[in-house]
Structures are given as C-alpha cells and as structure tokens.
Length: 394
Ligand code: KG4
Image (cartoon, rainbow, N blue to C red):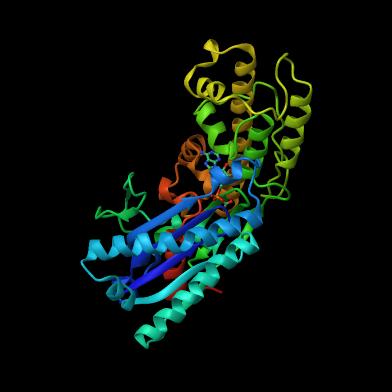
C-alpha cells in the first residue's frame, strides 16, 4: 500500500510516495517502530529560493503560483520514478494508494491551498478510477517537523534527479518508555518552540518565541549584511563552528523564568550596530558581490580585508548569540522536565553548531533530524500521517 504525501506550506513544493505495508499491521506497536517501518520509495522537492531571492524574502502570492506551476510535473516525475523502481505500471502504483497526507495549519494560506486542492483532485481521480475510498488527511506542518527527528533510516539523494529514497540500513529500535517524556526543540523560519511530549499524541508547548523566530532572525541579519535570502544558510556556512560574540550582541531571556524565546531584541541591536558600523566601506543591506561571498566562505578571518572581516565577525557573533539563547532556554527546560529523550527539528536544525550543542547535553537517546529532512519536505508529512493514523492525534 502507498501513501502520497504533499507539502507546500512555504517556498518548497514537495511530494513523496511512501510504502506503508508494515505500518498498519500489528507488528509495530510503538511510535519508533511505526515511523521507521515507513519506506520512502521516492520524494522530490522543488525549492523556490532562487525565485524569491530578488525580493529578499518569500512573496506569498508569487510562491503560491509557483507551487501551482510545479506540482503537476513533480508528481509526474515522481510517479514515473516509482513505477520504474517497483516495476509497476503508473496506474498500478496509483491503484495501491490508500492515503493522501497533505500539509495544513501552519504556513502561508495561499501556498497551503495549492497543495490541498491538488490532494483533493488526486483523490477524486483515484476514487473514480479504483472505485475505492482513499483517505485524505490534513497534517500539521509543525507535527511533521517534530516526528521527522525519529526517522532514523538513512535517506540517500540522487544528485542528478534530486530524488530522495530510504536505504535499507537497519536502525536501532526504541520502546516508547525509552523515548517519553520527550523534550523537543523545533527551530524553523517561522517557528521556534520547545515542546514536551508525554506520549506520541499528548504534548504541550512549554516555550515559544514571543516575537521573531530564530530562522527569521538569521535571515534578517543576513539581509542587513548584504547576503542573499535565506541568510541563515550562508551565515552558518560563513561562521561554521566558530563561537565568539565579538560585538557583545545581547543574549535575550537569560534571566527569564519561562522557557520562552525572543529574537527581536537581537535583530534590532544588530540593525543599530550596522547602521553605524565601526568600519568604513560597509553599507547596511547593500548586496555583496558574488566574489565577496565566495571569499567570506573560503578565507579565514586573518586573510580578509577590513570590510569582509567585519562581516564575518558579525556572522559569527550573530550565530553564537542566536544559538546560545536556544541552548540556554532548552537547557532550562531539560532541567525542569527531566525528559527521557530530546530531539531537534526544523530548517535551522541543519545548523552544525546547534547540532553539536544539542549533543553536548549528553542525553541518550538524542534524536536529531537527518539533514535531508530539516527543511520543509513531504516525507515529514508522511511520517506524521503514520502517527496520526496509528494513534489518532488530538
Ligand atoms: O523549516 P524551514 O525550511 O521553513 C519553515 O518551515 O519555516 O526553515 C527555513 C529556515 C530559514 O530561516 C533558513 O535560513 C534556516 O531555516 N536555515 C538555517 C540553516 N539552514 C536553514 N539557519 C541556520 N543554519 C543553517 N544551517
């Protein structure tokens, strides 16, 4: 049996076709087993980043149009791939589809609608063709991010086609008692949350940003520095694992009693700082030349000219402070809730410094989302769909 999974919540159009055979049987009664018995037969994601870069951020209506332009051809390419891989005719693959999972709830409304309308048309067509009921479920994008950390079967990507597939690498099994209570740090472009899961279906948000999300802060600082959207990716590639706060940027929420986070203070502090920079030649928000970005990526601090050295130091300081706050607040929550396991997910969880810092808590098991699943993707929608179907989410 197959599921079709769809994600269009922001600037990625993503479709996955997953095999569900064992998941619905009684072989796996726990969350970890169910999630890891899902096989990603193929998943394909088209990023709109290049289209939005000229505007310095995502333009929702334009993004929705791009989803509408892309989604049919992505589905066709993926279906052909799955058909070849499984030696089934495309219509036979489709006749084995029993579930369609589509992202909903959190995201850009017009973008989400494209995915949901596409899901409805596919279901209509399949039901007509096969004369059977196909279940269509709208899945919370955020729950998708959370459950992606538990998928430990290695995924491999074909760099020519861009298609992602599960490998057959066997994973360690964990019982629910070894995982829950689970404390989770979800850090993406639009959300920053600390979530306590006492079971797969029972959770509460114990901390969240009271203003900007961490990814948004990365991107806005990137823009001030003249880096193309999304700045978070480039800041992390420029700063790598260096940790230093050269310019004393503020770490917010240090003394807060809650586990909440806040990034607008840092964003404003960096803006004021960059409006009157301590060096000549730097102009806030002036796009850097390609050659300058390459130099920032490749050269150590001591080989850079004044302006680029200043930009690199700002990247390092911003990353240090953004991550310090995440780790401070998550660390406080760990002390308070004493979880059996911890997890990390969302676009910003691709950040190497953050991944290392989470491991430094020394909690076993620690579930860190594998890199191909950190950004928005359809596989995570399928994973949350499995949990939803097996356990019924509230
Ligand atoms: O989860 P995601 O793809 O989209 C949302 O659901 O929001 O996250 C995108 C965010 C962007 O802000 C991007 O700059 C950030 O994730 N990001 C990173 C890194 N890779 C992506 N931020 C810091 N370090 C990275 N390596």
